[in-house]
Image (cartoon, rainbow, N blue to C red; front, side):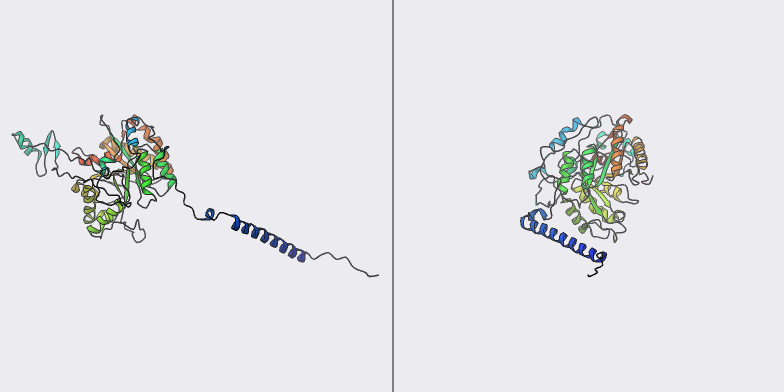
Length: 407
């Protein structure tokens, strides 16, 4: 009789056998599934896909002017009139550029060379004169009344500015939200949630820039394009391939300006993007601002520059210009933003008008949506940025106050 001792199976060998069987089963299942997808699947479904949340043509449900503050209903016609891009070449102001889709613009922009003077006690004092000299003139014809320069009807500043009336002469506050286009969700929030009087500024690297501009204008906003300019740390920061530089010739900078302006129609003006080095060189700034004036555009300074020749150059070029009184979200916190808005109110009441710039931060939108409806009760009118810039072309120019962006 053979004595066979009962032996338990080896745990190590059992583990190896089960692991091998599991790996084989998983490989078989995945291989079968992959083969089935390869044979029966849709190859197009696995290809890279780009989904655009925008539209080139106005759909039936395009956003309309949303009346959130008093006075919006009177301006409803502005949003309805801009629901589609002009199709006639004669409808576009002439900027002297060829847009990227090769559309030609043919209406010549007119320039106004009317001598500039200032009104003092009902008398016009021309450059080189004093008020006492003018007041001593006895012959009425010896002191002709000069009119302030006006904006050409065919200029972008006239064509694309949001209508605004202030018959009571209230102090005004204007807001520009810049840096738009790179973040679609925040850009949509700016377009749809902020009042139409808020001006929107888009970066030139925005995908489908023309579509964004159309959508903003359909909602009633006026639009700016940001011009990349050379910062001091240009070696580390490169704002755009067409950045304008302080040491470039006037021809090179104006050529780059034309390239940026050709990205899309529909804007009332431009605003600097960076440029703390470029803005300090008058020989670089003067030709660019002169070109902007010839094209009938407005220019805005975003309030972040410590030193700038923009203001002086704009006066020489007779350019509609607005320098931001405050960068409201330099510190993007609720308390800091509220403090800057309070200072903006004070500047408006003291100076007659104030301009604030901000970025598309959610906290900025939340504070603005609460603060803007309170302006009417404080005797302040919310005005588009174009209105603020146009004041620089009149004798009763708004004095520009600069607030510390750091509070």
